Image (cartoon, rainbow, N blue to C red; front, side, top):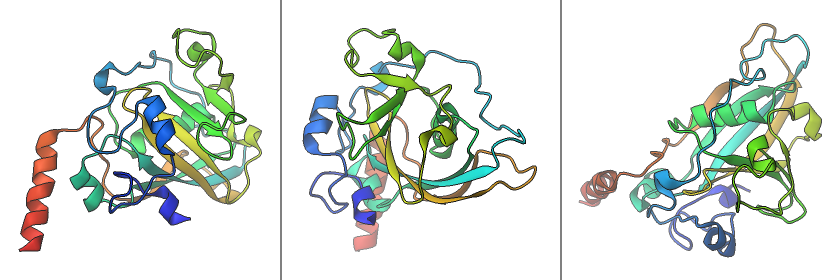
Length: 231
């Protein structure tokens, strides 16, 4: 349901996020425009480009149409009011990896600096029974203290076709284990790839992309625009 994909201050005009408050507190996330981990959040090591990203392989004729909704993150109150829904539609081939999906989401939201990330397949975000997929460095304990007990699979080798996705299925994407950008991902269609079409590809955008690191001057600009509209 669309109201589950909104974000912003809990109980505010933009609605309550799909991520429960205790999770946000435990993970250090925030939705009121105050910086969380900021640039001090753990960064992902640089990796070679995924073979799945931009693949033109003849195998994997299946195409997944995916809507990615921003549900929580360090956005200003003014930005949240001006952009009640921030969503990107992405088409991915079934033989492309979760690493490639991360790259497509990264580009679709106009982000500039890489950080760690994770995909979760469960009934809700941080479901203890969820299947979790992350970078192999995290699996191997490369970052001590970061969810040491969590068992994750490798995003670099897991293809969309491996996941058994169905139309209407939702899963979760968590980017930057410091500022904590949370997303709800929904499979809206499964079809056949167009010959010679480039994938992944972004096919629709709703709402502006929030700055990866919030500038408080931007918040003042949004407030000024709202004041002008009220006059």
